[in-house]
Length: 391
Image (cartoon, rainbow, N blue to C red; front, side, top):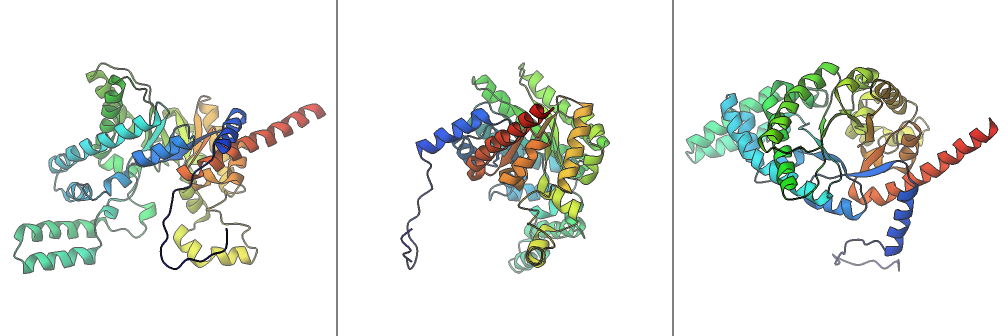
């Protein structure tokens, strides 16, 4: 750059990549033996990922769809519902919205696999903070809006009930789907109705459904059995056949240890390396990065931030064990990484050595990941050749 400093705002333009760079990436793809997908939660993200050469979506986080301004009130309605019937009315409204989201994401990916993670965060994250709800009750009382007072009082009661001492290890992921199966069932119906619509329009669709936070083989067995019934019902009602897969996110250390049992019920594993790192180290990421990780690195206690580059000695060994156990049970098991490490070159190199089939990262890191995947393939292929020559 020129080194000039501008006062105030200047017009920004999105970064562009040259034709020569894309030519280099295409050459890299021909060499790479590890695929690159993208984390994308919206059709816009999916479009950008496709433009940058992602061969599918490795993580679509459905909770982000519920946070939209027009959906959050419906989600809150569902959470504070007194019974299953009331909850179902709200879910029926959300179904239409989710179906539309999935339709456009599938369309943007043009037949490449789309891994959709079912609802993961605890339900209290969709409700306002308790002090905010209390203020809303007071405002509604002043204005004499009795219906709003009642609604916010119910919301406050629910927020207090859902409050947890440690939400990260609490009532979230597959645990939610087991206690409230209708939430997951709505999502899977939306996925397959969207897929059927595109299929009938002549487009290829490849949905992969991912169940989060599994630590027990019985959890995935219970969840998958119910959800597969929903998937088959939608396909049967429309008299179509669409290829699909069920898998799980491996992010709990116990899941790595019992991976062979979990592999009996799924067709793919995807490592959620962010949470797996937190649970293996016993670090809360936000607290650790703010309070002591920089000090640890500065004083040579840690070599690097394990949330940016994969810890190959600890977390990596759990992953290696999970892959070996999973593949022993199911040799066709597909293995992915969808945490932040999926865009880190050093982590990609390690992923190659333990038999990962693909990595998934943010759309803007896809070009870097494609190059790193090719470099890892070349580096370790040469080592394999040299090893063979010395035998």
